[in-house]
Length: 415
Ligand code: SUG
Image (cartoon, rainbow, N blue to C red; front, side, top):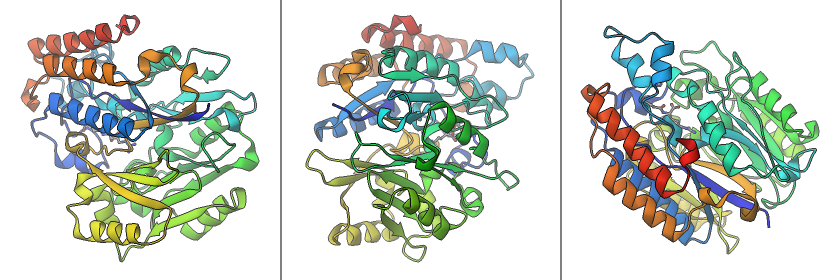
């Protein structure tokens, strides 16, 4: 049976704070801090276990090979190369699998298969190195060509950031949906990472019905305030759009366009006088997993930071007391990822599929969660200081740690 499976990125052993993402406030604010890869990865596993315990299907994608020597060679890295450039080859940014790909479930596509296009992530050097290795995993996880089609990334210069700028509305995950692509217009203070033409190319490649696609411009003021991806200010699930009132360039026109394609839209809008744009971006209230529980109720999995914000938590409590579609708000601790600008929603890629058609080596159960946790506890570095980047012994530890995980999951093909 078709169902939503969330594929979380396992946080890689090289997780560090190098301040690489211009326009991502958390990344800039934590530049130079020590990082805790082991704790970061265990936080991620705990989040996955929580959703599994709620009765939801859970998968994962593996960390990519780091440090990436091929990237260092391609930029001619030498002893004088700035630390920032070197750090790109050490980034664990593939943990944010909302940027791994855009996914169009089978009921939406012309050939009745689920289509996946890895995001080219060309705006940032440290992210642009990801897609071929990501595709190698998607090719294995979704190898069943009767049910899946994995594309190549769209070419540069069209920046594509994947599911982080993509929403889907439907009556139920297994029903045909309306796909909404949110793009930024370049020319602002910070890069607009998702280009309209990239979104349109993905929609064409996936064989979507043009009448069931909506293209919406992100609010330039939101990008300027630090919403470098639309999923920092909006999230959708089934009929529900949960959004900040300043997410889109023309908010009313955006709602109208979605309603024209999907009349059943249920809007949960948070006004700016309840939660300011700045507070929404600081707490990542919208970078939440909006999930349909087996009971049919919706739950919002938010970062712990939301509970610490008086305005956000007051709003959440009032919403739960109301008769709206979101019945529960559940905080989770993903602070290590949050400090680099990645909340619960960034850490997962949603795929609607029958789990029986997915390679089981990418699906979580309690036994696999135990094995992954043990491997992390045994091999992931406890702490990385910025001055450690480039250290040969640490590079070896990071490579061996990933190798140990591949062994345990029987995925040596990705070595
Ligand atoms: O691309 N952070 C990521 C965070 C991505 C969040 N994803 C979603 N919103 N879906 C980014 O900006 C920081 C890396 C560093 O600074 O080392 C970073 O890449």
